[in-house]
Image 1 (cartoon, helix red, strand yellow):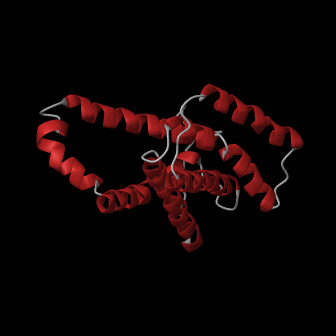
Image 2 (cartoon, one colour; image 1 turned 135 degrees about the horizontal axis):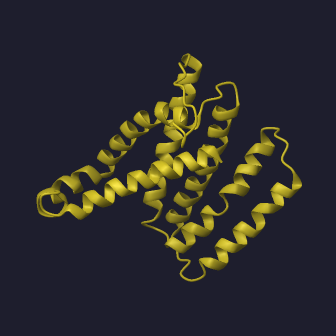
Length: 192
């Protein structure tokens, strides 16, 4: 398509499949730990901490022996300062929330590094192809995590009274809209 470019589904060997599986686990854990962390920290604190992801990504790249210009390294400073200024206010957190948030930003930076390797390294996947390989695995993993954290039971218990489209169309609309925005965000971040 003109919007996403020429996308060809690439067959993966065993090593490529292992990389996709590892990436899907990083992706799923990033989502689930990020959601859990919001129970223990303020949104402002979470956003300021997440602004550290580009700096951590650069640090991980440097540890892998990548050459990153000093200009690019310095470019993350205004981002971090800008987010901190924009999120001024409630910066509350618990020790557990801090731990979860640090895990989340480490996973987010690792996700950027790993996806970059799969897009430009030996696999050289197109972003849409990467998502098409990874998304089904991440969906299964997220459903399993949701089951063990009680989210599925919570949805099931509220389905007939609050969440069913026959009762209220808004929750399903929000879910679909969130899915569209998430897909768009993932495509944009992988093509950047």
